[in-house]
Length: 461
Image (cartoon, rainbow, N blue to C red):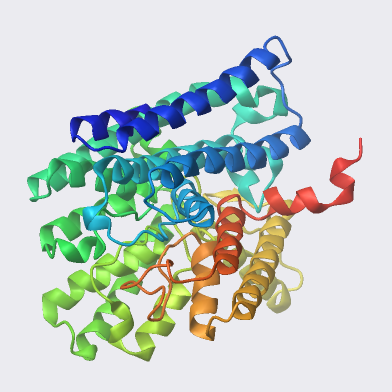
């Protein structure tokens, strides 16, 4: 919080003192907790790791919302909580109207929230989720985290390498934006939200404000970079370059965004709003923004026709790679699902044959397939309940369905005139905002992490 305070002070904003006060309050609470728990055991059981993950994220969202309330940029705590939840979960849905005139400190705080949220989810995906066998994430379990007791010290070591890579990519992105014509403030904030695949912009029109092909292609490159497992970048720096190109989910992800961009190009070109290279640029930018869960918009693709609306609704669930900042269902789960279905078909055709589904050349255990299938089932059920809840608040079907899908997949913009790429979530009632906040939280922590807390068996000793 002191960073946006310094930024605001340098820009002579009156809001900088609010960030100082919020920093002091947060530091006081954190220091009290630290002092009260010094000397306690460093290990974590699986139950404690689950509970700590959920509580720590909620605590971060609560304290992150304070500046939004006390600067007066948002009229209610509901809006502030929604904005901070959207920031830390890297969703990108906003309720702030008038971003072009909002103070620099607040804009920087929004970007910083997404940057820290993106970094946090990478470490969680590498250290916590595989250990807890959440949604098939045990596929990526490192030997360093074979036991729960090793999670904290080993997470510190591996997170330092990832943080170094994360900072490096962000700096390169900011320099590229600056070279393409962005101002220094816009370049830094957009770099943080691009690499974190968050989507918060400093402009109401998002990337449409800049109307620059070079800026949009730079964003395309770094949105893809943020959606690739960051451990592969660490291995790349260690001289293992082939690991980046031999990864099954990276290849599948790149093929998917390429195919989806070409389809969207055809839709945009036929719509009449964009033609030729201009249509390709907007198609690639918005497809990759939606698939990676970034949520930027360069144009209102809802105007491309009903085919575009249906197409963007479907691809918003895809997501990027596990171990990256992106969200959604994630590509590796589709690979596991495809391999499981293919194995079943082969067994039907060749009953005496021996077939093993594989991922990255290694056999996929039955427990992984079961976890992935369970994740798909829970994802569909959560989407249905969220959609129903939003419709009960009075929203039309398009807004409710796309809002639920966008929140659960942490994409940001939905579809329709209210929450589409040309709108925002400010006009929704408080009940809808709390439902969407719950959806963002549920989707970011991979469903199981939260839902297991509602089982009575979890709380039994």
